[in-house]
Length: 171
Image (cartoon, rainbow, N blue to C red):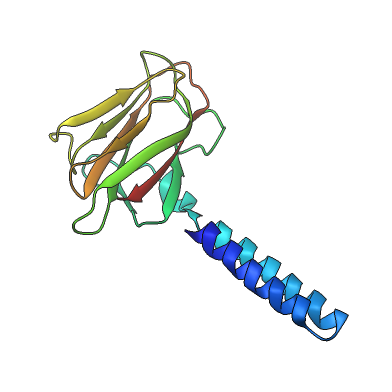
């Protein structure tokens, strides 16, 4: 939707620039349109890097509020940096009342069969497990049945890997 809006803004403003009486005014208007289009396209995916990198606990998971704009989060060491050993991290993704959580991955590389990313359909590990992912793969896209999804990232005491980068949104 944001890119459609950006394209419409760019087209409308460019048309105004073309109709302008002076070349300088047309160039200024066109530059403003390009800036508006770029700003609109960057709002389609926002980053919550600071909260997303905090490693919460089972008793106090790091809360990541979802909205209709996709947010980004990744393992605590950051995107494309090897994660640390002996981690047990928890994130609780919450969405507004009447919506569900959608979670999908851009990058996923964990030590196969030793390091895991678990997704639960609720706010505790007592909730049904949606999926457990390990290894180098695209684990897919996952949905909660309600407004909460608990994500747990566990690593053992040896070999690490690049980790994961995920997006989440309310749906």
